Amino acid sequence: MDAEGDTPRIAVFRPDDERIDDAVALLESLGADPVPDPMLAVEPTGAIPADAPYVVLTSKTGVELAAEAGWEPGDATLVAIGPATADAARDAGWSVDVVPDEYTSAGLVAALEGRVDGERVEVARSDHGSDVLLDGLRAAGARVNETVLYRLTRPEDAGESAELAAAGALDAAAFTSSLTVAHFLDAAEERGIRDAALAGLNDAVVGAIGAPTAETAAEHGIDIDVVPDDAEFETLAEAVIEAVKGEESASDVDTRR
Image 1 (tube, rainbow, N blue to C red):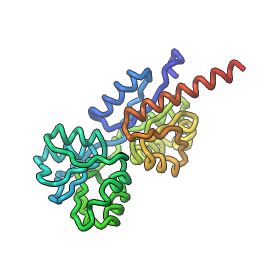
Image 2 (cartoon, rainbow, N blue to C red):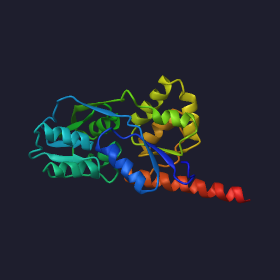
Image 3 (cartoon, one colour):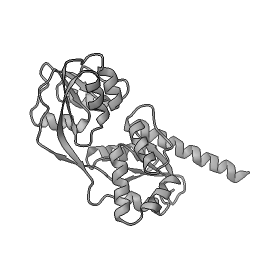
Image 4 (tube, rainbow, N blue to C red):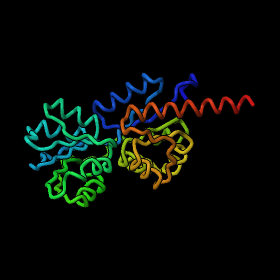
């Protein structure tokens, strides 16, 4: 907690652009003390989506890069992984035809598997996309092409949150992808504090934006306390803060006994 003892300190790992700014503003509005520690940097490849009857976009970043390059979906059925990606596509002037009920690679497969047998499907995304999407679409009979629009790397100065976790100075952390988990641990390893950072996380409330992120965390020894139903950062932030407050209340009760 902060010096006042009533404001939870929460690490957030969004890319160092408007997304980290928005995340900080949201957490502050919810009564938290954010620790912005971007774990992702975007390196565009210069590629654009290939033409296909179905084009799948899996991030707001991918939409923005494609739009900046002058790409247009034309007559393709445009598929967005979730509301943020869909909103970015509409902001670019495109019509979005499919948004899955579950905002994950598995959700995309479920939304498309009855429609793409024998069809060409273009998947345009980062270099760290899940094989679940490609394998699932191929199993559904699609002829799949993947185009890497950007690479995701770890910023050189990332790691403040790992130091705080190792010192027992974090109340919570909100992981927004499997790669943010890996980069957090890599930053801790470089500082020689991996075990202490893991222990600090496991004494805090840890949220993961979806099942794949939670599974990655678990594989690395991180106990996940919160996985929201919707894979959106706002939902994750609200759930993490609610969990922190719940732990505080339980602690207060225990203290009074």
